[in-house]
Structures are given as C-alpha cells and as structure tokens.
Amino acid sequence: MKTTLIWKKGFFKKTYEIYSNDTQIGKLVENTSCSSAEGEINNKKYQFKTLGFFKQKTQIIDPESNSVIGTIVYSTFMTRATIEYLGQIAYWRYDNIWNTKSSITDNFGNLISFHGSSSNGELEFDQPNDLLVLTGLYVTNYYWQMTVVTSIIIFIPILTIMF
Image (cartoon, rainbow, N blue to C red; front, side):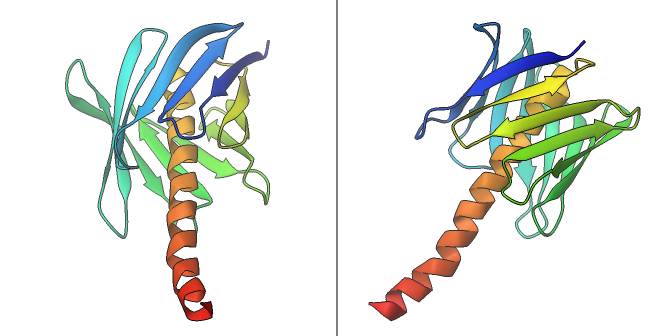
C-alpha cells in the first residue's frame, strides 16, 4: 500500500516540515549554508554534514552515538547521488528535465518518489524508510542550492559586462 507524505518549506525559511495526514511527523533544518542540516522523523534524529570543496560528499550521522552511519556521494553534473547507509546502497536521481521529480531506489528495488518545487511537494513509497526520506530531501535541497550558486557565478559576470 502506498504511503504519501507532504513536505512544506517557506520561501526564505530553512526548515522542511514533513506531514502525514495533516500531522507533522518530521523536519529537516538547514544550518547557515548547504554544508549541514539536522533532521528528525518519527522521533528519530539524523545529522547531515557536507565535506570537501570541489568533490563534495555528505556524512550521515546518528547524533545519539555521534557515529557516521552513511555517506552521500554526488555526481559531477548534479543529477545523481549514491547513498551508502548501514551496509546498504541506494541511488538518488532526477526523473525529469525540469528537476521537479526525483526518486531513490535501494538495492531491493524499493522506490521513494519525490515531486514538488522549492517550497512544497510530496513523496510516495511502499516500504517506509525514514532515513531515506530525510536523505532524499537533503539531496534535493543540496542540488537546488548548488544550482542557485552556479547560476549566480555564471550570470553576475554577464550582467556586469552588459551594464
């Protein structure tokens, strides 16, 4: 049976709120930049900490034990990511050219589908996996932020030349 969760994020806010049947069950809170975030879903907490500059990867940390339980490795073209967690592997990818749909597939064929914009959306899955729900939102947010930064880097020189 498919489960659908809704997520919301205000335009200038740093918190994704995750809802099931109008009840908030989780959140993902960005820290000052895209380099880290703290998440909670169904009373389980996780931290995400991005390391590196050109070839970045993110550690997934269990704050109770302060141990790394997974990593996210990003593709060069910002369209895919590999998630290694608790001895398992899952793959995140965009599913359309507009980057409004993405999905995570694990090595058992389980699928979590995400779709939405930068301010709201929903996700569907058959097999619940709270860690992958938060990780999927984190990767999506990471790529949206990298797209904005890249756009600024490209367009500011063009605009300064034009004016």
